[in-house]
Figure 1 (cartoon, rainbow, N blue to C red):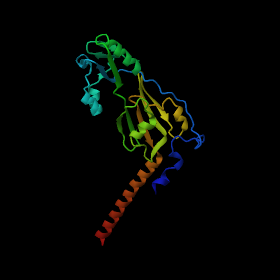
Figure 2: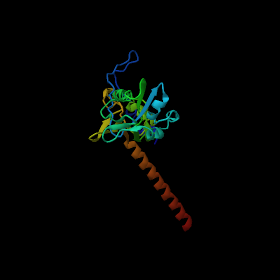
Figure 3: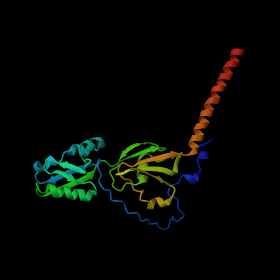
Figure 4: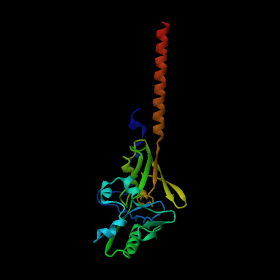
Length: 243
């Protein structure tokens, strides 16, 4: 049985819609949600100023480390947000950033550092934007994202896309919230996904792609083939012995 005969073609294309046209684009309104910082997030904070000796204490992430792009190293040398919602800065002390978006957190850090160092510029980034992709994808695993506008399609693309046996109509998105995890089902074949609030990924999201029944059917067929092959070998061996 061929691979193509196991999976119905209509179940494979993403974002199916009869409204799409080659003559004009179809606009979809779906503003990107503004992520609010939570305990457990890790921030990169770079302070730039005319006197590097004054800004150096704040820059625990060195230039060479930043340029290396190693997520593990960046994570360990960033500013973690504690359970109390605060980060701890040298000289400045604790600042509550929980519930702020990145622009607000950057403005807060710059305001407080400016009380000690004049004419500084603060660059604040989120280091801990990672997702996990599991199931019927070509390269399951954990991935770091450096794009604040990451979408579910981008996340699946990082994992090499779904295999032919991935269920595109029933992808589980597990999202961490302050009240615990929540689960929502995503249909990749439905064009309405572009309007869904779950189209955009958030830090610590997990995607699980369920297998189609064709995967189980094919696996069972393979197991049966092995059983019959084994039985055939036993019959031939008995025939040889009893001759």
